[in-house]
Amino acid sequence: MDLTVETFATEMAAALRNYERYVVCLDQVPEECSESLQSLMAKAINAYNGRAPGMRHGIALNRVLTIILSQTDGPRPLCGIYFNLHSPYSRKQAVPAAAQNA
Image (cartoon, rainbow, N blue to C red; front, side, top):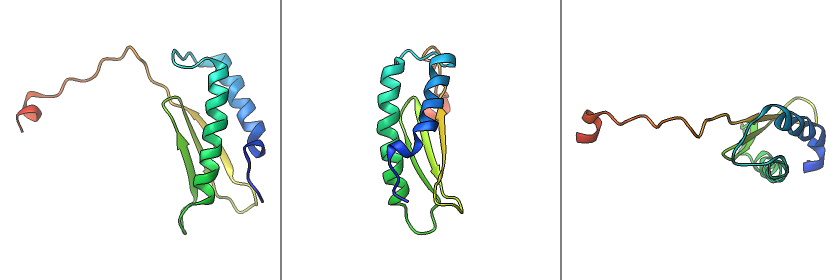
């Protein structure tokens, strides 16, 4: 089976609906998320098609999205689209003094 971005149009449409409804993102408006989703899906497909023997996944990610294509017994891989949740307001943890002097 030839995999294309359009192969996973249903999954991408569902992810975009959830993004628009539930995800608050200061970095990307829904239109930019759609473009990122298309680009990352193409990268995940390339990673999946070019994976080493014995490997079962093709993964592509950016700061906002992670896409995982997983090998199945059927002709079409499973597609997982995840939102990388983080807060731009969280404080970075301070490095302990002992670690700075090491």
